[in-house]
Length: 325
Image 1 (cartoon, one colour):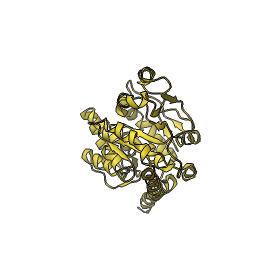
Image 2 (cartoon, helix red, strand yellow):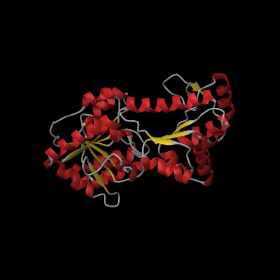
Image 3 (spheres, helix red, strand yellow):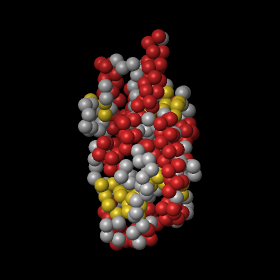
Image 4 (cartoon, one colour):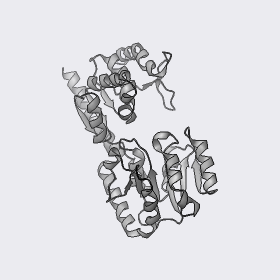
């Protein structure tokens, strides 16, 4: 049974919205979740996002049903810093869960600083096996270089900074940037891009997964300037498609990206990014090697179906242990 406070496109039980403010709605929905547990009698409960559904599930289960908690990044890296109230909610979810899953070692380490998990494991999300057919093996880099930034226009992703830093390459036609067409900073981005060079920056609308990954595969470079990430699924997808990954040097990203398979740049010295992108056209052989290494890495630990299978095995063990007791 899937239950959610949000409306979704797939079949789910829609929890009633209660409470005057959003962060109280999770706690206010506890009686309804508890009733669902009594009726459905689940073998376990799998909340996603520690400080919201994880907290609600911990209150609702009260130790009667095993909890497998999925962490999502901002629930550990951002939310606990908002207030002592948010931190305590997150701590309660972490310490109440029987098993905690995160997509990077960095995320689990940061979670441990908030609240000690009983058991935990790193399992990334990854990309579905069928999309490896989109992998570009030895095709040359385009001129101008086609760069996709698949992160919305929100402050944490630093899209405005990317536009500012890459002005010289956009102005002289060396690169073309592609952004998503959503986020609170979208209109400011459009105005800035138009002032640099009309047509040098394009924006894509929302697509289904098949459409988006085929669209992304038509680019040369994946670029992220995010200042906070766990292990971004978009990076793993780009590696599987054969894009050259370029990302801000932050802990979660380092678990997938190094000098051997892509490029890291410092957020304190973002002009490094201009040097990296300007030099890519002369590094064809190195880019081919990076593509091969990235595909091998994804096959090894970034296939979605394999990682979900690991997750189900953990859930099955917990459910079995509960039944035996």
